[in-house]
Image 1 (cartoon, rainbow, N blue to C red):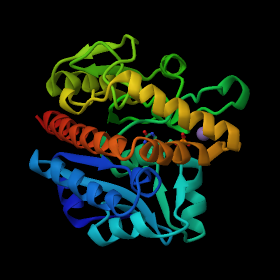
Image 2: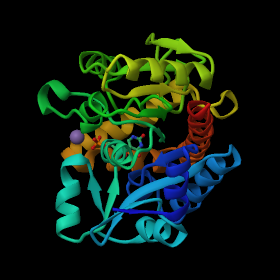
Image 3: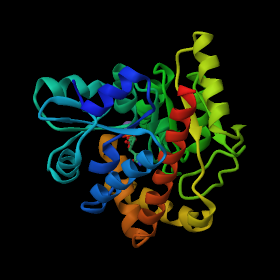
Image 4: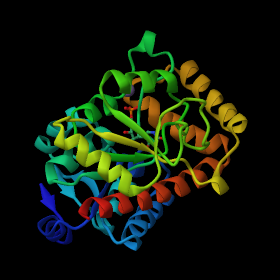
Length: 297
Ligand code: PSU
Ligand code: MN
């Protein structure tokens, strides 16, 4: 595992660090916007006074803190594997390139000693999961990984009520950042109730309390997209229903399903979904940096 120099230094000195995933770059957004966004998100973390650590695997080497060239490479290269935790050893041993999902990023962040992680949306229980069994590894990984994950909730490509039920079963605390409603990525609304905290200091306090009680699981901070970038729920529902129907018609499933849906939603929305996605990830990066700072205080 290669840890970038400034991150090593920050780990030694107990300075704030925010882990970032790379599947969102390789399989979540189109090139070259994906690379531009990844760099911008890192900037947001830096502006808040924390150090960004984008995680990925290149030629079998686990990298904690991809540099600019490496981010460009992951965003552009063909055949980059989509890694959930179970595929990390395959990717490393076989010297392949891999982008880390929420599960793999959480796992590697914990391994490196980083406790805060920002992303866009997490994986979850897919619609129709009672037939397909398709439940993202993200959820089980969060149940056994000691990190704070900041996301804008989850897209309704998933069955959101079942996703929240599953998180409860698995013992993952879900806390809304300034809201009692689980946000649904592009929109702040889902109609689903969660607990609420109002500041990064409160999140830090909850996290430290959890650890002092010996509870080993992640805290999922659900941070709604800023109001000015929110897209109406009715509009989002139409895009997503169309994308999900197309996936069903084409028989797309397994690891290919989420990337297919993400790409189709960007196309169907004529880029509007991508613009919203960018803003909410930046917002999550800022909140994660603030939480990372609060943890050091
Ligand atoms: N949902 C999004 N954007 C994403 C992902 C999910 O809105 O980029 C990515 C994340 O990396 C997440 C992964 O961990 O997809 C989940 O994939 P799956 O559904 O195959 O478990
Ligand atoms: Mn799956």
